[in-house]
Length: 312
Image (cartoon, rainbow, N blue to C red; front, side, top):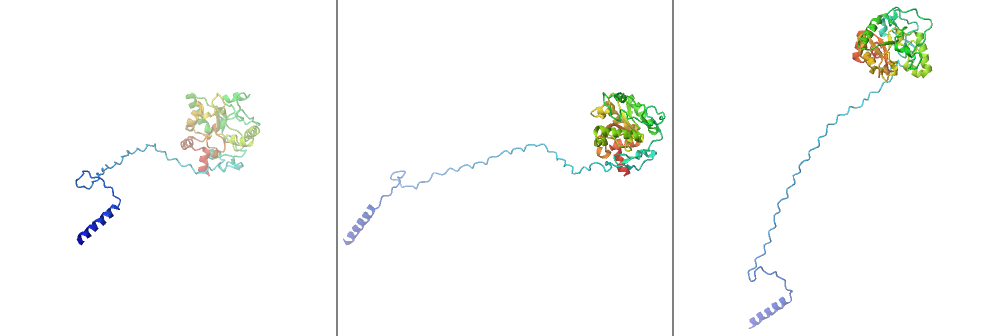
């Protein structure tokens, strides 16, 4: 009995304890009365791996190759040659037979007594008449323009024009070739004495000032005309200095292209002022002989540039 009583007491205690604990909610089983099977979690869908998008490479634009720029020249413009400074030094070559080697510029000059002994008419080749005591400055020396009283003289040969006998044959041949090609070559000016050049320079000094006269004329003794081998040409239609660039005209262009074949070179070509000292003059030519003239034409050197390299 005592054991039964003890058992009963234990039952009461246990019952009492359970009555004091809050009931825990139990999820109903899927099937009432069935043995509860632990819920199997729904399988998590395995996500197909997101394909890495294939990026179509954008074609690099075809860029026209940029030309590699030519580096700017770092050469310093040397400026005018040293002899393009006003002075009066006797040129080292004054022998008449060495006239090609006679260089004239702002510094070097021939003396007033330099008068070629074999001057002839540049028009006919006849011996020159006795030199006049007083020479007058002509239309060519003053670059007369249309409307000037003396302008008409520029449209035909100057009857006073002289040239050295050694150059006359080539001059005549040059003019004959020009005529055959349909071009008229007028001799506007040729030999000038020291005194005539002095008057010419003084005129230009009065008209445009000393600095301009230096560039467009020449002081006495410094002019190639005194050598007797220089010619100022025209076309008989207008003074060459009235054109924008006479060398681009029919006659001026023919002369620029063919002159060397007859021994003549343009003394003051375009773009060469730093070595010639003078402004561009497409009508002024100097006879140096066919061999040298052709060499200069091929090299594109100005005569003074050649003289500077070979003689200095």
